[in-house]
Length: 299
Image 1 (spheres, rainbow, N blue to C red):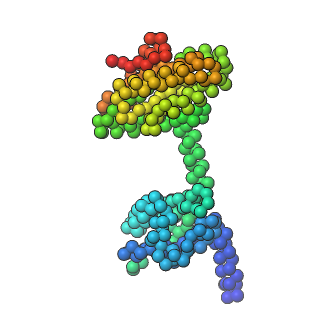
Image 2 (image 1 turned 45 degrees about the vertical axis):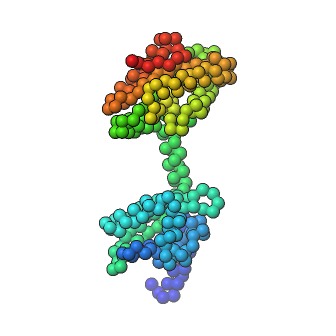
Image 3 (image 1 turned 180 degrees about the horizontal axis):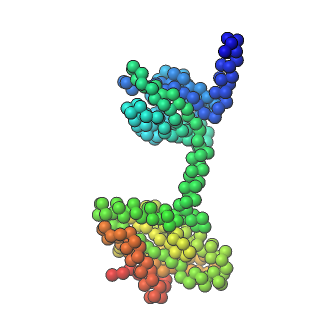
């Protein structure tokens, strides 16, 4: 390439780097743990709020300050990459003076040097991607009408809790909740009012429960409440309090027109999850056979 063309090309490269929506960097860590960025250039908002001179001199304390609770994860990824000469791939939250933190993705390749390791890589703002991931995750785990966890989320949570209960011998109980005569309610008041009852029931139930409890919609007019660290006797008291509160709540169609039947069961250490749910379901049918608007459990 002719010498007189070199400067324009370099200027073009610098201009390009300044316009990319991310950061190109070289990161160096000595064997004794000192860290700094010999090179750090790019566009976007990230560099505006960062002390680049400090990062070029000594990045250790500033990295800890910038990454916050993600710092241990970042350092673990760096250590793994340095030890095995594997690509460095991780993400962290970068605080901004105004607004929410931005999610930053890091991708870099390591090179061994006599006194340490150097990484050449890029950092990209992936906040929109993370927000979309969270939106999709919420859609897959949430009932669209009530905003409660759906069956998928419930089963994951219940599987985790039964595992903990088996391991530690702690109590765990569930409620199977069904709205009495819901079809008649829809026929009399309309499906929009029926949807409103489901939404209000979800909100009211959550208010009556503890922060560690979960209420989920199984489908239709059926819900399940999961009560960790709760024996059957205490579960029965909570269920009866919930039943009484719903019966005395005005859902917009007059007090007493919405009641619920509840079947309860306590987890037996080591039993299959389907067995626990089946016992609560059978107890619910028992409550309906008794006359509804009551709490029932199997002996």
